[in-house]
Image 1 (cartoon, helix red, strand yellow):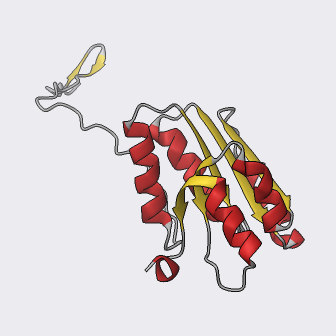
Image 2 (cartoon, helix red, strand yellow; image 1 turned 180 degrees about the horizontal axis):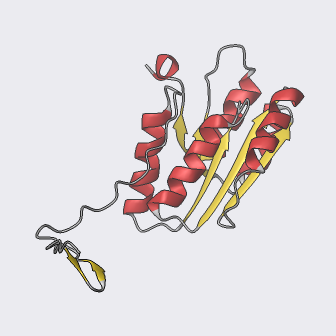
Amino acid sequence: MTHLPEHSIGGPRRRLRTQPRRAAAAPRLRCRDARWPAVAAALSALRATKRCSVRIIDTDCGTGTLLLCAARHARMLGFTAIEVLGIDDAEALVERARVAANGVRDPAIGLTFETRDLASALGDEADFPADIVLWHGAAGCSCDAVHAVECAGRTLIAEPAVAA
């Protein structure tokens, strides 16, 4: 029988760590939308004020990718009540967003996607404005839609080319 110094009767010896373990890095969300840095910054600013809840509206949500990233990021920052609303006039895209939303299994995140006219959908939001409104810009929108977007939220995040 060969005696190996690193083994004992009870099995292999464990070496003591001399350095503390590194903290696991927070998962990074990958969102390719040009508005993502502004969305992440707005959520961080809200959380820095000790807010626990947030409402986000995406006025042209498409498949809901940016809105889903924002909801997950808000949860990662520590928000405990996240309400998101995606509005689009393309039924097929909204249906894809609903399918993607079904994959979110966090009770703190409420996801709603609607196929509605922008002005009528946001008319209801003026009484209780959202914290963040995501918008592509005024190109091709009626004056009523532009006014509805301006009244629908406290922070408006538009495409960088539109905001400049």
